[in-house]
Image (cartoon, rainbow, N blue to C red; front, side, top):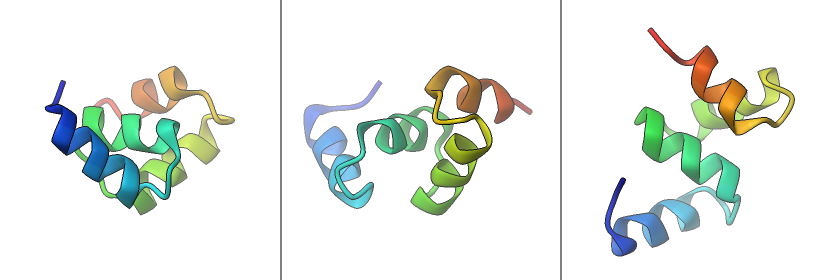
Length: 54
């Protein structure tokens, strides 16, 4: 998790995309990587998070 303030900042950096922001926070990746993971996962957050596992 993260603080409300950090969540708001990340959502702004994610261009308002909640899915992108969630992946950014939970995986600790920048926007570009989060978008790539989501694209490869067909837009599914769970799949994007699973794919990003080490």
